[in-house]
Image 1 (cartoon, rainbow, N blue to C red):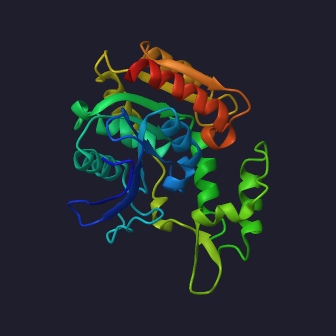
Image 2 (image 1 turned 45 degrees about the horizontal axis):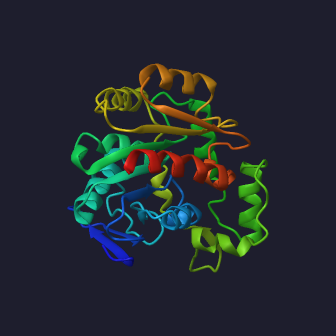
Image 3 (image 1 turned 135 degrees about the vertical axis):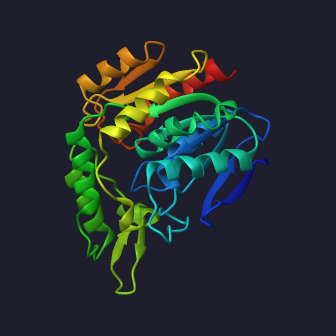
Length: 281
């Protein structure tokens, strides 16, 4: 892997996944997995921080998001995302630490069974097997809102601010354009297939994630980074994770909610930089 190059992988189902790789080709590799309704650009600050620290970083748009293909069959199941991740890992061809936020964390945990040899560490970002259902429903409600889009980036920024009022408003709403697309009617819509929302997660997902967590090799470095104000990984969910994975390190970021990296990118960067330096070198 060179210092910077595009990443393109076509899955067995014919879906093209688009991403990029940066940093020294011989350095420890970190693969960043975004959450539902985001794109790989959500990791821009984190990627810059990690490459500056000497790591190699890869990130890609999940199916139905950003520059990657939409699924013709509408298959946005979490197992499908996990299979895509394994395809990305096998294409890159060398082990990586997985850093997954929300949906990306679920994909990473599900993929551990099929690509254990390609995972050097696992960082779950505000997601655990037994998450708080109310917080997930709030995320889903945000994603389902505004089906007719927005007239301006300012309107889109206001919607984000309404969902997450504790975050400092962006001084440059135009930066949201990487998360938006312009429709034939000229209005701006989020840069993902509306079908990605799907059905709400059921108890079978909790059971499967708990099973995969229990099956992790004891020697695999494991970190949970959560937001103190998160309504997805609340105090009860974090305590249950500690019971399920006593070997894990846990860092709770003050003044951050579910969107930990976006809310406090500085503190989030400190947490994973420290963890990766200690476990990958």
